[in-house]
Image (cartoon, rainbow, N blue to C red):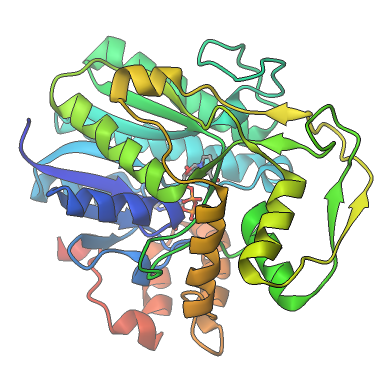
Length: 376
Ligand SMILES: NC(=O)c1ccc[n+]([C@@H]2O[C@H](COP(=O)([O-])OP(=O)(O)OC[C@H]3O[C@@H](n4cnc5c(N)ncnc54)[C@H](O)[C@@H]3O)[C@@H](O)[C@H]2O)c1
């Protein structure tokens, strides 16, 4: 296997932080680059080197690649909220496409030949297939989906032109947390059904299930869910495959079966012991009956299939929230506020040094050793 370090972009985020851990456990040396727009420093494995910065900053990438022998990149950095992408398409293409463009430029300049890319089921749009395969038609229905598909195309073109190999993973819904409950899902704006339902169960607030007359086993929407640790394992397998000389591949990470919204709400109630207070609301425009991915190709190429079920995902999420009622924040929530401001400032000014000064004033950040471009 080619020797060197793995650069994980977005390694302070939900999925990236779990992937960093699995990489470290598998014996890899890891460098994380993250602008902390939605990620958390405390989520980063202490055995990984953390570089604070933006992947669109070519100077920063150049410094990282010059200092470290990077043999592979795992790209998680980006924005993920579909409705937000509809109102902010420029910002979504900037992060999700320009970020990948900058990474590929740095990889080409430094002769790094392997990239594992976090893509999404949103590239398929609403498919009629019972279990979506990788050759299903590509019809993204949001700027988020388009920005990811555009990045996929660029990655594939870079293989033809420069021999940069890829493993592109398309996945659907991700849930769960680490087994020891030390890291878990903590998006500044939480839109994902499992954490939203766990929070509703704890607070007793009423929530809605949109529609109960779909063509599924209980009338509610059926969706694919994968445990974040299963997903992280797949990313490590994908990187190893490339480093061992394997060919490029585009692979769905799916469950083949999926779970309905009602099953999720009921399982959350079982796990927390607090029945979720829910009502059925009207259907939402554009929601397909069922969206589930085939995992045959993942099995054939990587020998991967999910090993953790819905109950495990929910149990791990609940335990993580119990152990960390403030998630990664501090009691006065200063940290999350800065993160939210940070997103706009990066996009408006790209003035990284002033952001760094702002972050430096926060005790929680000061306690960590952060490197910026000038330190490298
Ligand atoms: N969470 C899901 O259910 C899901 C489903 C399908 C695909 N994905 C993909 O997985 C990836 C990770 O998702 P997540 O849930 O971990 O999101 P996340 O928001 O928790 O993580 C993204 C990380 O990237 C960082 N980041 C964003 N823009 C950056 C930039 N320009 N430079 C440096 N760092 C930057 C953020 O600070 C954060 O740490 C995304 O690319 C997303 O499209 C996620």
